[in-house]
Length: 514
Ligand code: NAD
Image (cartoon, rainbow, N blue to C red; front, side, top):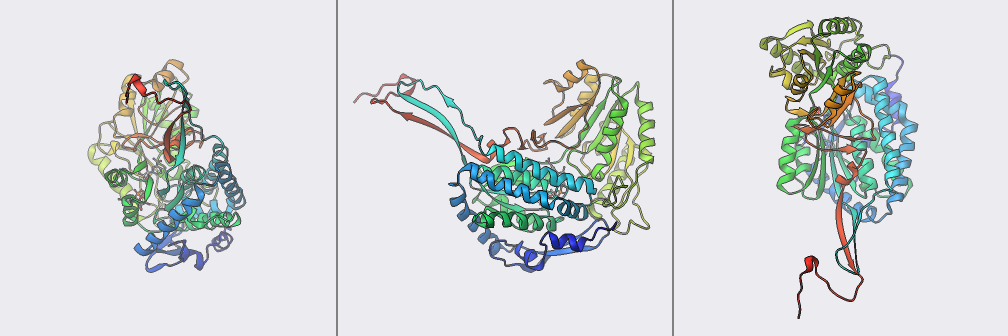
């Protein structure tokens, strides 16, 4: 385990039996041990720890406590809420190494990416702290004399956060830090594949709340699988559901929340492409393509899944790509010498194998073959060879998101055709063009260019800064999280008109004489 003592890491993060049970119903500490969830590391196949699942009674109690905490939190001045979020960020700084290590061990991403994920949490806390003094509304000019009109933003109430395994802690913090400064309280249902990192986060925030004399109900954790997510989505006491995960999950959540006229933010699957033109800096393009495709073993929502390469440079670029793949080191992600870690579990490995078979049956030609790796260091059975297939853009498998390091490469002749290929998939998360030609770049960014929520020039598709609004279009769900003015989705807008005259003039010149 490369000198990393996971038992010591867990201890320093307060992962102890009491907290594992407590995570099932943070408020009352009751756990349903019979329905436990084992967290197995994909790194070495060992059990990290187990948590109980929240029972329906515990769930009801948690939401009741959250609702009660909201009464106090909504009346706490926003900059004071921001100060508490700032302290949370400080605690994360202290725990960065341990929490990043646990993220890497429980999820399987590289240690650098695990640490990067915690850094994102710290960054969003800084952002939210500043935001807590900037929840601005507009003032408008009233058409009536002696009237003042303006708008203000109020918190929504309980925000339910459903998160995916691949960003087990950062996505929660993107939502929670913003939701908290906006005056909401949060109930978090993490992925059942990564429950222990959630317990670690909860231990940290609960400590901060206690130090400030604030109720735990401001940050609640409930552990469970799909049925718990469905319970949360259908609960009319939860004003906003922010759900991150597959498009299949998002379609179910969208219906459940809409049927009770609740609000939702949906962050769903991607199928991200890089267009590499004949005017690209090929060294930059190669690095972006390889990192985007194999980073996090292809398990990022923004992973590069498709390369659309101009015919004039196609053969040269393909050769460089195959050469780069031959140098990839696959193995324990806690070892910084390795580039690629494991997939999350055996189901993910089966999906990878199935997609390869489907691609071949549609006529795909693998220039780097995929396989499941065995032998020393690969005991968990979750390590796979990143692979590359030459395909036609219209293959069904190419239009489907497979959460694994399978890269599809295809040729184009004109930029308009390349953009059509790039847009012609159901998903719309991240996209990029590699070019030093300003006309090509601007065309790609124009209204007739990329249809994705994220469109980059000379940067790959993978990864994003917290300062921008993050999210995608079409089957990616349309939600926006994190920076810019994404905070508005966590608040309700109220328009206020004040009459300080001694008359009652009606709008639109209507008269009503008595
Ligand atoms: P998943 O959909 O299997 O699970 C995500 C979460 O939803 C889990 O907590 C799960 O328990 C819950 N869930 C599942 N079905 C549900 C239902 N019917 N109702 C309510 N909750 C339900 O996804 P995953 O395998 O954990 O994550 C991978 C997927 O997440 C990929 O598709 C990836 O692209 C996507 N993702 C998207 C973003 C984004 O911001 N767009 C970010 C990260 C991951």
